[in-house]
Image (cartoon, rainbow, N blue to C red):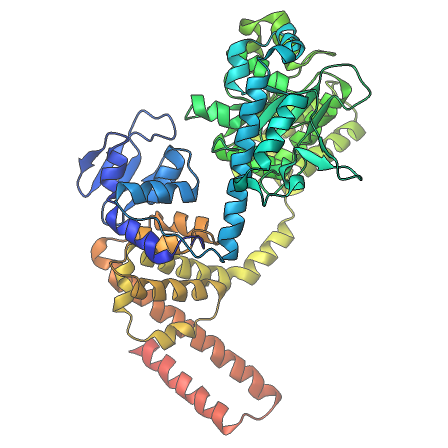
Length: 589
């Protein structure tokens, strides 16, 4: 639950919003039985797999696995953040958006960040307008000479920072609304030792960096003259700008295309702008930093296919290999990465200007697959003949393949690896790949706990999908004795089901929105338990009984073990016979 907004207000919004009407105002829904169906607005499909359920106030796509309530749909469809979505739904339902007291620390932080976003918006406009002015002619001329047209300057809001533009900005900061903003928090200026304020980006071309919602968070800047200064610099890290979480051009691409079939990742601002100008779709870039796990999480949230296209120099090749290794733990069966290898001394900007659109599109189509890149990089395109060469190749390949979580992808990798080293027996290769002893031991050891966890997962999925089941449970104390992390979550959900008025799936999930377990609960909310509606209540109560019985058996085992070491107390003996009597009764009656 978002702390900035009272949970009661969110429940009221969800109660007043009819998910069928909301989604129906964006896409065409057709009713079949109790559910409504449509072609998913978040990925391309021929047969409708997008289902909306009125009772649960919940949507689920069986194609791309996206699901959620009214808030989730609006966030995803309109590229809004949580607060913007709540405000939008408040307007739709004629509800007054709640305002908290001024002394609230969280609200102060929120307002401070909002002021920073507003200030960045002003800075972006000032820099962008400045590039078209007479005193910035040489900056505009530089972009023109680089082949960047006016349309791209406006589309990416490219600007120029000089003395006059920075004076304008400083005057804005001094205005009442921005008085409390620390000059260092902007990342635009810094104070010298003599307290003189100086611009970080003076006489540089400015590239605004926007987050997924289109808010300007920081800037990249390029020097025009050949001075000893660094060619490119970025904003310093601020309360709204984190280099490790920024992808240049992602907002702009999402603005054009709702569905990103793939993303071409390049190294620089100019590469992104030039490729976009040449009508190369889905192009984004890093901010002159190395790729990290946060970048990959963001990229794979927006597409399932990532194509690396770095410079054709030694540094570019090294960055390509590092990106490949870093990407492996993110490769599931529905995800992949590809590679466009450019000739020596070329970068995406130079190659497209030399070859043109048609040949660059061919490069995209012929991009090296993940398996080809791995095997070619290790073998260095040489034939592997000697035994020691094959052993080295096998060991290095297996070490990297093990990083991949996707089971089917791993399988294809192993089959191809077998052909490369001349091992035709696939099962022999699998033995080398897997350490069977360790795996069997773990399975034996955890068999009981796995079965217990599956039962609790079924309970959680049933209670989320059918919150009214909570009212069928009479003895709460019994459930509390089922000790595990999952059982605690289940008990917590049960309590929320009883406390929330007119409870449904959407309201229950909203309680856990900002918690680590949210995505797991979302998946369980659309889990197919293959239980008929008539039997849901019976099976639900039966699983609780079984889990309670298992917890008593574990307690019984502990007392027996204790009795072998020392005498039991009267109290322990009493508990033991009580448990024994209950278990016997339940098992043989």
